[in-house]
Image (cartoon, rainbow, N blue to C red; front, side, top):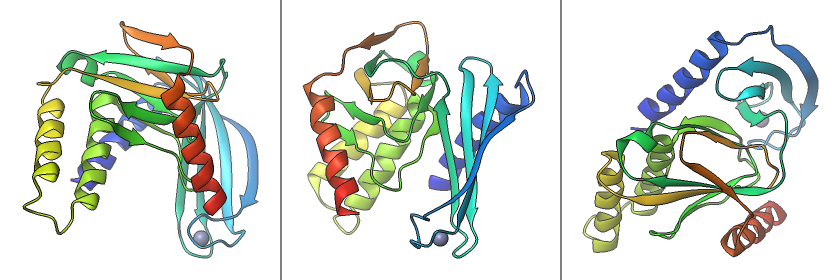
Length: 211
Ligand SMILES: [Zn+2]
């Protein structure tokens, strides 16, 4: 259920902000072009927070005065080198790992060929590894609408549902081109970006060009 998923993510963010150790600092305030209606009427504010697990993060929030579109964004404040963040998921433990996926980062699961490629309206968010699986499940539901008997759809749905239960082993990779994403967990590896990340970056640029 999309609402439940979203609610869970907002709770995770609120919880972190409640534990924030400093008053938020207003970094920027500006009117930008709204990705929903195209008018320059999206008023965005960016705040610097200091929170547990992630340290300094930047939270963007805004609302379009023309169409009511709501914008929210999260990224790690101190950017590192471009990198690939690799989580080997063995079960439930890794599903609970908290993560920041910044707006420009791509995500993929090599064992399944699942890809999340940022487009022009992409924003950063805080979620868990499980939250990412719910997003893939949601994307699958959209792609499989009206194809109820399709074996490919049901096989993928079954795999994702099992993975969400902690019953599948897989690798979650975040292509963090700007070094503003992070995963909090014991066995998280950071490696140089690979050729899959390069390909997804090309794809993402293509989406941006078309917009
Ligand atoms: Zn708008």
